[in-house]
Amino acid sequence: MGVAAVFLYSPVQAKPFAYITNQLGDSVSVIDAQINTVQNTISVQGKPAGVAVSPNGERVYVSTPEAKGVAVIDTKTNAVISTIKLSEGALGIAISPDNQRLYVADWYENTVNVIDTQSLKIVATIEVEKSPSGLMVSSDNRFLYVANRMSNSVSQIDLQTLKTKNVTPVGKHPFGLMLDSKNERLYTANVQSDDVSVLDTKTMHLIATVKVNKLPYTVALAKNDSLIFVTNQEDGNVSVIDTKTLNVIKEITVGDKPEGISTHLDDVHVYVANWFDNTVSVIDANTLNVVETIKTGSGSRAFGQFFSR
Image (cartoon, rainbow, N blue to C red; front, top):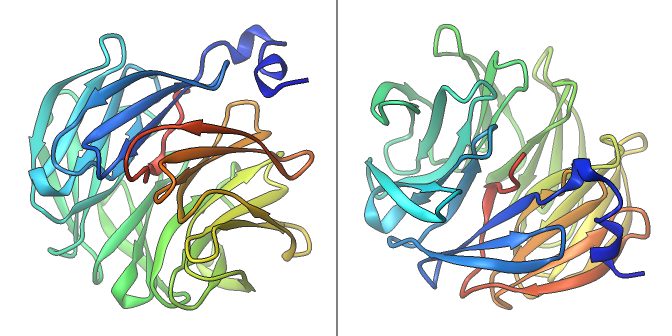
């Protein structure tokens, strides 16, 4: 049975979309994840990199470093409807669960810009440590987590005060982040130390460090938070970690230089953007095999949470 057939079994699964930034192609591929085909390709100038989909699925926000800001896509028309001017450091991006605030990390300014999603204006700027990259907002909207790549740390920001509550050392050059569904554990992919840091969010203490392969970039969770999937850029594969034992249980070969990763709404199929192959690999978390490869655009990066909800 093909993957497309598996996705058809429940009306709840109807038409989730994956929005894949193609940095070298100045575009975003829109994948209909019910049938695993690219439905549309949206022109987005400025080397699109980071991506965040609004909770209501109506907008997609894409960081565009060369255009010095963020492009706002209307998902009904699949077109850019507005841009937000920031700086060439705009990279990591995340949106609050109440759809009110957009957070954009500025790699060069060592800040996170807080943007009102209605006015598309900056309402606050939070100072963090060096080279903020990956961002993650807790599902209860209490905290923002920031991977500070050049400081080898993670900042925990209190979203009521917009002040830093904790800064925790992790591995070398953290980039992608992932928070579990209970907001209890935070996982960071550490590019230069080839490992994943596991943090307890209550104390922001390090629980464990899990060794993976070369240049881990981003992380995703699947199967009720029981498995972590880590893209290893240099090795062209994905490490799978059991969250109970914190052991690597498999390495899955995907496309060349995998970067962004996100999980389908079914919590089983994990999508990996492959930079050099210009593809997205689809992994079945039950079998831990690649079950489909989707051709996208040049330099598929998809850094962030790229699935519509």
